[in-house]
Length: 161
Length: 161
Image 1 (tube, each protein chain N blue to C red):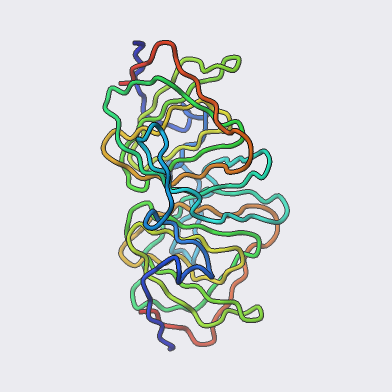
Image 2: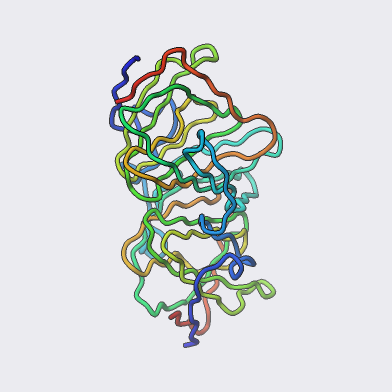
């Protein structure tokens, strides 16, 4: 198996693939007579296609053992997809550049507890991968008509450590 | 002051005003080869008006003392607004029916730790009111042109206990 070493998730490193949803380093302003700080507009939400609309869901995922085995990635041609942890624990984020319609070499990131991600529309990514214990996430993604899922299975799985 | 007693937040009681964003009692299905349960489509996200788009933000609010004093409510004519706590602590939710363009008598709810809410477009509601300690929330609401805020100050404040 090919080995990939996960790096700390930063806005800069993740920029080609999506947004990091986090207060740290984000612009903010005060609302509610100064009682509340708003870290504003942290993700580019995009939904396209027939009858497209934005969905808010919660997913509850079992953890994966590490090193994690990466056999496949997927992408959503009609919409972005955001995952924000509802309890601050790290999870694994895997994305790939697109190379002529196929995923290129994976990039792996490990979040700091509390960081969320928003995958841009049509960006190759691994499935949601908690690594500590069962974890709930708020998901903001796309509903609508059409097939909004493309999967790619690697000939040789990667190992993410 | 008029006294309002907060009730436990339930989908049924909150239905005229918005969605309760919670796994409990929500329909779900399995994804990711059974490793992940998706509680699907928990909020009616609505954005209207010129250049409308869905925003994802984080807000960090200071807590309010209880009983809470309710001096004003607000509404957003161009979009829904969802608040989901990023750490499971209860907070206070106040909504009012509309009565000929003015807010009617407030209804107050106390969330169970973890419950979020989505206010329907143009629904009168109080400002975000944590009551335990400083609390972060993910917010899904509307960006775009136009004035998306209407405020109403009560002649006599309410006290919410």
